[in-house]
Length: 294
Image (tube, rainbow, N blue to C red; front, side):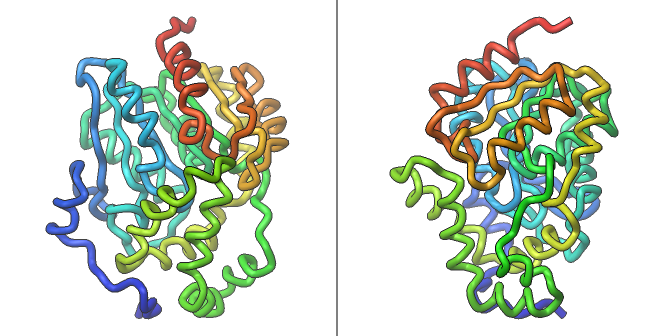
């Protein structure tokens, strides 16, 4: 029996999903919400989001690359946004399997892959397991260089039943407030939080978040980054200098693991530079994607 979170008052259904926009596909572990944009004959770019903020976090990137003639795919990880919240173990294997089945379901065989935050380990593991699918790899403030340092409260949340109780009593407000830490620019916070909170009313969100924390998704994946470093895929790395979610100094470990990486530090910027400073990030991203790599 699932813990009765009182603020999860709705079930995801066809009516809600129709209003959400985008498309939906049935995969082996549940329905995945996705959106396609741009030119279907253009090079494919796949955008993988992070720990708890769903695919709207790629709004500026999705719109820009679509207008530039790329075929762009973004989607909600299981447990987030308008994708299903299956009662499963939310670990790296679930998320990599979801991505692989989604690509196969859409018949995408060669892609450029973008991973943000927790999407970093997901995309890195995918590159390591299915290198033939990926032409270029872009990382944005990726998690996994070393374990994310939790507060005492969040460490306690990982304890069975204690976590359910604390998340039920205090989780919604604290989670909405915490996403503000991703941004260095205060003017963007209110709208960002409003978009984020929509997903929290649907059953299974908090269970998915807890399972993700308890199944090591915010631990170290440095060995995976080292593994893909040996593949020599063209790799681009962005990092906000003022990131307090995944600190900027973690970039040194990623660069050591993937030494051929092209690196861009973004000044006066937090955890999501593509969202906060698209006028700086987008031209760099475009040039990298258009460049001929040997």
